[in-house]
Structure formats: structure tokens, C-alpha cells
Length: 464
Picture 1 (tube, rainbow, N blue to C red):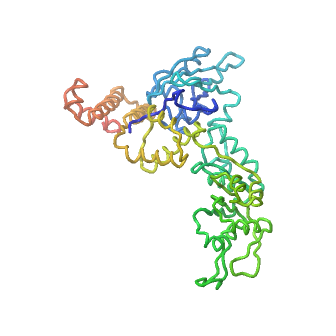
Picture 2: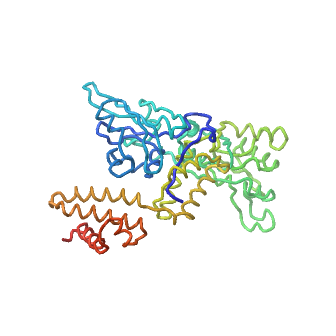
Picture 3: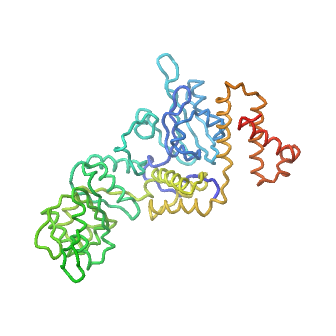
């Protein structure tokens, strides 16, 4: 796997909403400091969004992410600038920078967006008045309790978040629809975390994984001696969810007989253990999920109609990932960061790999995408070179050296030693450590390579 990324072809990619197409975004102040950006922009450069928000667009040029900044050109000319920008990951993005001027004519903000990606796809324009709502900003101050713990880049997922925030504090029953792998349990857990029951338990049961003969025991529990082998009493899953949330995953797989008993629990807020003689009061919110069309099952007599109406108070439908291209972008960034941290890598995607991933339908949805990203990192990491990241690190190491040693009156000779050493290291890496080939490329003697590398290390360590 090389450092790859995404391209998009109008003939191959079915898009139902132009707002579901990735678009780069920079909002900077009058000096080029990045105030707002998004995941797609960070991905095209091969860095994290958090890191990007700490930078100035001039840093990106200096570090080699791209050759020149149209944002800075807009600041200098105080006029709209449009140009195709080629990033170091192989992206070709037609971008437009629009300066927003103060009354005195000075530049207050610059909004830079892509309205066309690779010359093939029209991109949506971002309204500067709402950009701080749709994207991540340095100035965002969000309480931990309100952070979204799942990717919501697309309009569809943003709407789901909005609905969840509206209904979280109520005890209304929720039925979550969606294909396998779309994140139904993630939504259920988000509702729990945002609700007044956050201190209570979140208990989940996969209705498809329980044998019919054991369903009642698992759901309701049993008393000691209720049947052979019941040597002690057992609390059922419904009781365990008291004062919290009971998540019934794949509820369409629940046997009809159990559906009738669950209906009684919902109506009376009480359960009776197997072999018990008394009812136990329960107080839990029920959230159910399914990847099937329950209403069709009702018409075929495979699901109780009365139970359907009880659990389907607030329906939430999660669209498949193939219809949420912006979420694909966000999930790629999220999963790549996750596995880079897990496997102690610093891998990035370039345009070709990103193109392949964006065009895929992902029938397994987010679960399949996550597995694919992990497979890329684990099985192909040996073929990835990190020279670009190292070069970026080197530029910032040089900047740090300059700023931190100003008071020590570091000489131009020391600075030159660092630059020479860094460049020699990259040439050596290009030739897989072959000093003879590197020396030919550099036009110097082989022995000079080691002498200059040693000089660079001594300067960086503060040794004369």
C-alpha cells in the first residue's frame, strides 16, 4: 500500500445529494492562521484535523503539502482567487479563496473551498455564515457530555444527531432501522449518554443470538429451583436494565411467544421470573433495532402488530454508507487514526486509494470499512514509505531549532549543517541506505555523507 487517496468519477459514483460530496475547506484569519477546516481537507494532506487546526497556511507550503497558497494570495490581493491546487497526496482540487474585508479594507477572514474536485465533480459551496456549524473550529468549546462519539459528516447523520438530542431526555421507545454495520448500537449508546439515565446501566441483548428455549430465562431470569439445574436465583436482563436502557438488538428475531411476554412487560412495567410468584417492578427505557422490514413481517404474521406499535414510537432510520459519502471520508480518517495509534504507525492515504474507497458501495457498511482500513495498515504497511512525514517533521524541527536557539546566537553554519544533514538523510532513504548511490546523487564523496550527518547530530544535541 502506497500513500494513496481518492479521485471521483461521475460515471461510476452515484450521488443522490450534492451535499454528500467531499469538499475541502479553510477558514483563516487575515494572517493565514487556520480557524476552521474539515476531515476531508486533512485527509488530502495526510495529517489529522487537530494538527491542521494548529497551523498557518504558510506552514503547509513550507512543509511541502502543496506548492503555493491561494489563501495567502487572496490576503495579499484582497480579491477572490481561483486555482487548481495539487497536494502532496496526489489530489488535484480546484479551489476558490474569498477574502472578507473589514470596514477599513483590511482582511478579516478568508474562506477557501473547493467547488470542483479533480475537474470531474461539482462540489458544494460553503456558506461562510454557517461554516462554523458544519465544520470543526479552533474556537469550539464543547462539554464532554455533548461530544458526538460517532462520525456525523453527512447531512443525514447530522439530522439523526439532531433528533437524538431532541428525544434523549424522554423515555419514549425508539426503533432504529438500518442495514447490518450501519451503527445502530452506536446510536443507542449515544442516546443513553445524552439522557437522564446516563448513570444507569446500558444493557444490550442480541435477540438473534439466543436459542428460543433459553430466551425466557435470559430475559426474565429465574428463581432457585425453578427447573433442574437452577441451584440459585438469577436476575434477568430486563431487571439488570432497571433505571437505565434496555437495548433489544435484532428484535425481529424474537420468537412470537416471547413477543407476547415482552408486550406485557412494556404495558405493566413489571416482570415475573421463571418459577416466581411475585412481580418485580422495573423502570427502563427500551430501544430496539433491526435490519429487517418489521411491517412486512407483521403483514406475514411473523411479528406481533401490537408489539410493533409499542416499540415504534420514534423511528430512526440510518442510511447505508453508500448513500453517505461524507461519512465515508470521516470514517476513513477516524479508523486510520485509530489503527495508526494501535499499531504505532503514521500511515496516510493518497488519491488512488481514496478514490477506490469512496467509490465502493461498502455492503457491510462501517463495520466493513473499519476492517478494510485495518487490513491496509496491517498487511501492506511494509510497502509504505514515510519520507513525506519525515520531511514535514524535519521542517518543523528546523523551525524549532531556530526559535529555541535565538538567544544562544546559533551560527548560520550550525543552521546549514542541520539542513544539509536532513537532506542527506532523505536521499539515503530514497536509495535504501546505499551511501555510494546517495553520494553519486548528491555529487559528493561517500565519506562526506557520514561527516555531515555526524555534524548535524552534534549541533542538534548542543555539542560543538
